[in-house]
Image (cartoon, rainbow, N blue to C red):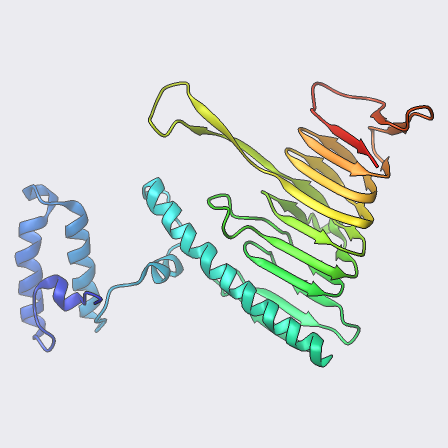
Length: 305
């Protein structure tokens, strides 16, 4: 049973304003940190009193707390992780609803536009056009979407770093996936997101993964683990065209064209072309691709198909 603000103050519903105020003062004297009380309990009591002053019977849920505050810098890492978990869960639910909605439109060959998410969670607009193309406007931040047709997108794609459960995945069973003017708009795909295009091309902007150190859970000094969120794009029967590829990325396609590649990236394709400062060559004898220029130790792996 959810504890009401009346329960927190130890009073019954219908109590007068004076009785509410007296109950708060009594508990405040008992639990205030200056009197040796627990600060967390005092904050709970103070919030219940403030809520009742405006007629609010129940305290905010975890999701409502998220919607009322976007800044968690003063909270513990555990609290931030818990709230972000709720955020990721809500976004994933929204994308699951979006997937059902566009699937129904596809089956009936209908057109429509609809917003998913919220101003707090992040709004994203989906529109199925008469051609069958799905238009996405806004940043895709968590959850999965499968679509049986091409997608054009105005926005970036990222993935939650606090969990693997709500990772961003977009899957096209047919058609191309394209950003609209990705270089001009600086759209990017990052932080472990995944795009799979079964039979089509991918035209995007910058692609970044993420790799960072995690301190030892037991608090041992100098001991840590490397945790990575590898961003991956797959177009086995098409081509991938992108700009900069950096920091833990995997690309797999029939043909790949990129500007630059850096830091632990894996490229797998029949043909790989660089239109920037680093060029790819193919040995006529071995059929193996290699970089003409390698700066520092970039840990780039090229796989010829």
